[in-house]
Image: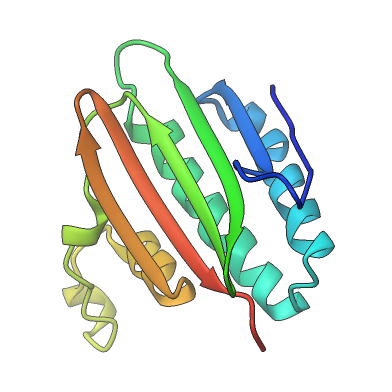
Length: 147
């Protein structure tokens, strides 16, 4: 694991690269939440950040590498009045941006299975962007840090 925390640094202040495994979830979340605390995010915004990041990572851990193990790279930085998370992996291509939001008003028995986690992530973050660069998924989650 690589951890950098220098607010004056031009590059990403937090950088973590670990195997895509649920056992590593605390090693991804801890540095990001410490970074958020250092930059005075409100408790509500930190909770949003933690929940969205946890849901994103668990999806990657569960689905990106069905046959062989792989890594996840996570970086976190401040850009103006926004906290930006960049999550990269070489797993199966998956664009959560193109996933349709579930009908959360439909009767429980009529709802399609899946999609609630992606809906939650999109609801908690101010912006969600996805691109495929060669063999890599690149997901950007953006959260406003202004009250």
